[in-house]
Amino acid sequence: HGHACLLQGKYKEAIEILKSRIRRYPETDSSRMLLASCYGHLGQVDAAKLIWQELMKAYPDFTVESKGQVLPYKNQADWQHILDGLHNAGLLEG
Image (tube, rainbow, N blue to C red; front, side, top):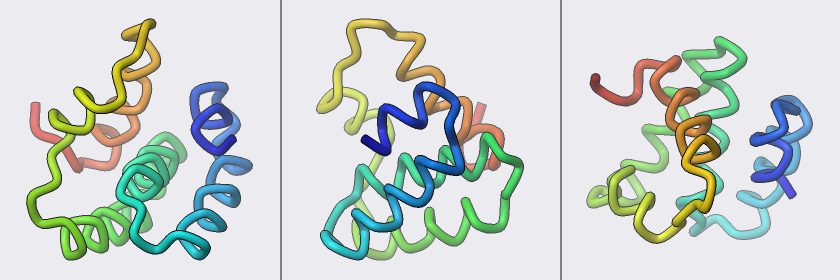
């Protein structure tokens, strides 16, 4: 549900859902990536970087590229929307 809210631009709603999911499933890497993207879309760079640091600490081999292969999108604009949030937060190069 948090994922869908992010793609619909309902970032604050998505944040609450994703934070709840992380509390329930602390091992989740996808929820942290999506949460960082939400924060990036809202311009909350420090919050995005904090979540990203948690993600990298828990999963040092995590890459956006590999996650993009695991989460294939029929509509590439949806994946780009997630990447845009990460770019906004300065979490991705390029």
